[in-house]
Image (cartoon, rainbow, N blue to C red; front, top):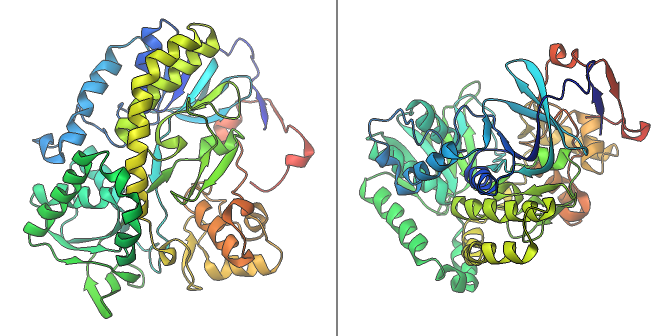
Length: 483
């Protein structure tokens, strides 16, 4: 890891905390509340202007005349944000964390200026991101993730009339239902959930009955969409976004019949995966999760990572959902309080018992969801040579295959040869696709292929900000590889 020394260090370190939390979603907020109640000093750093994360974005300042149309799973977040604002944690919003050192140092951008603080213990609660959906044409203007459509709705009350929603997973159906409740026309819902998933999921029915309310909620959403008269295409595959310079529509196969629907906007979604850039850049150990088809940090039931001062809470440690994320925020903080010597292990065990039981029950239901909405291989591992994999650097499957044939056998080698993953998102959108492509080409498990090796800065930093540092010292020459 690179060491950065500011000219006035250590005087420039103006704040020191016992616990620092990165992210103010359900996990981060509940962690901050728990830490505050224990009397420790705690700071929360978040890149959004208001607390709530993606799930509760603007829940207490919605631009909509009636936020109730977004559903009770959204509005119930207001209670947590009120508790969070009332706790003693310092909340630094609208900032971007771009470096976390092994010494507890955290550097973050605030209005173009780098600031720093230190913490004895760190909780990463950066949540989830949508799974990449690399199909032909997904890079065209007019294609967005369904989650982005929801962000526009929650942040500014903006919607797109006549859009196509395509993919699979509970969030896709929820967003379509939210659009319809607002009177927005939806061109079509193209459901890519494979027919065979409904057979395979029978083995997970035991987990499904542990959360009957969730099942009822899901069936209710489907019925709501059907009753609206929205065109629904089930078991769709072979999706392609049509158009040359701009999205013109979506073509797909449904029941052996080819369809081509015109639309200026296509919203894609096939589930969510942990947001890994910080945990990877911290050098935490990660595992490939076959159940959720994604990489996630290696943590124990307390959220403790492979580094003693860092814990991971919520969806950033593996997809568990908002309610479980809030529960794990409390559990993870109790563990950090034990590590700080503020409380005992036995007391923490007692206080965490209900939350741990709740999370275990929810995880059994999660196995059912993961199996039912497992995305198609063809929508995760593109085959068409001209399909774009890295949208930042516009690298296609053909570009990567050429790099592979020239010796790019693992993600970092391929990155060096093709620049795939070197763009502004730092591999967030192509990392998983690259791992699975290489696994296919090498005919080996994804776990053996690995992921990009990420380093600070975790986010783009301007040269003006970097110029504030007088000494930039690589840890060792061996780390001088392409980033």
